[in-house]
Image 1 (cartoon, helix red, strand yellow):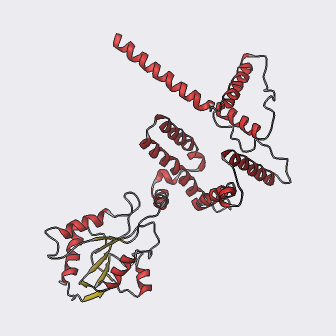
Image 2 (spheres, rainbow, N blue to C red; image 1 turned 90 degrees about the vertical axis):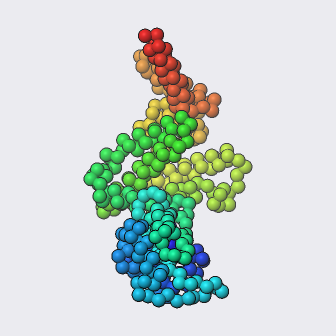
Image 3 (tube, rainbow, N blue to C red; image 1 turned 135 degrees about the vertical axis):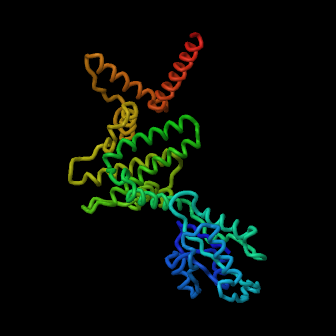
Length: 360
């Protein structure tokens, strides 16, 4: 019986069948004494052994070692045991080593290859071979694998080791745009991959921050804790006793809670503004739209004059700002609308180029 456990699940959290199997087996074998499951077996009073020469062994070699253990040719006589009325005639449990960082996760390729070797012509005659999945990763479990991979890269890759928040900043913006591009293209597989790149930036910045010892450091768990607290705080209709009648109420509550948070942060300083937190480094159309949304939600008159000037550039800026206001009034996102138009224009240019090439 080849027992496989998910590396992202705490050792010892096994299925009932897995616990029955290891408790009733004639022998429980491990590749080394530091297998993460062994302390749980010790606590349960289940005996185990390290199989000499098995640590790091390739499936064919390991199959030979296990064949000797099953057949008793290694000098050990196997007992017949009974578990819940079922005879386990010389069952040997092999504790598969944990997955190394990286895909695929949850099921070690080595365990499947080992099962093939043991079940093949070279395996012990008359012996059944089964891969038993003692635990499975929970949703989000692979985030732990990503944390492990990021730690390994930070320690062992010269490029990753020298990165800082500042050096990574361009990638944070670049990967976000690539994810948006994949979304607009309709390629869902590409979107999945690009979202992974965005997630990597979060993990990378958190890993860099975790190394600081000046009191400003934080971990990826701190990042997750902060967003969990924010989501719970801003959804009192889900996690509290507030009642809403629809999405509009949710938006109003969200804005009111944000305003209260800004006021609390500004206590003792200058009064907070409805525009606090608006990133001015974003594209101009998106910036204008966000400023207008914030102002509207704060009750600021939509007729507030837009600064302009006599020169053409200032007039053009005011006109663009007015176009953004028109888009807002129509329920459109001016940034996305302009991007869509730009894509259509790019398609037209390419068609023109193809036509020109055919004429030549």
